[in-house]
Length: 283
Image (cartoon, rainbow, N blue to C red; front, top):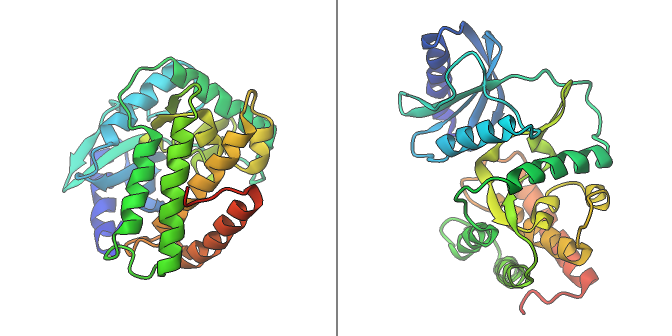
């Protein structure tokens, strides 16, 4: 979120909570990206705030409700208020349960895999309209092709990313096999280690595709504990996902900390991965 919008977004979250009978005298910024995530005190609620132009808040609320009701490991909405999207001063505000994190440590890969398997099992029972994973790949490819939005991307790197996104998106999409509703980005930043176990957050990126696409966002060891994984497909998905997140780091509006340095580092990883696997990104 643009720095100039943050004070208004914080005020919108606090006033929304107060209007619903929750005492919100202070706000702590937990995360700032396309959405602002706040911990409101002393009511101890987690608020997610986005511009009203962001149209996925209602989808995320409804999906979180259905998944939580079926026992899936997802963060729950705050039970003290009506589960809906609140609009105030040009922002959408959603209110969630705040989970006190347990002592920080690396999540055991087997636990991570079991939690993701449970989430996928619940998602398979839902029939909701979502984009296909290839639609998200195409968004990244269009960003690579847009020199105005990615002006610092060198021609050779632009070609590498464009070819990788196009060829692997096609190859993976044509592989066949089972597809289902996915989280879309179940990376460690979207996993909470709580007293209630591992919980997934940020459902706005849900899409349809093979479970290997989701596993490609998780640490490498996780894929070794998830049953029935097609390892060759997972390797291809890892390169594809790396190309996608690398592309976003070159967006001139990207606000990810150290994003440009990471983008440069990840370009090297893509080249190394293609060489190691023998894949031809121009195919």
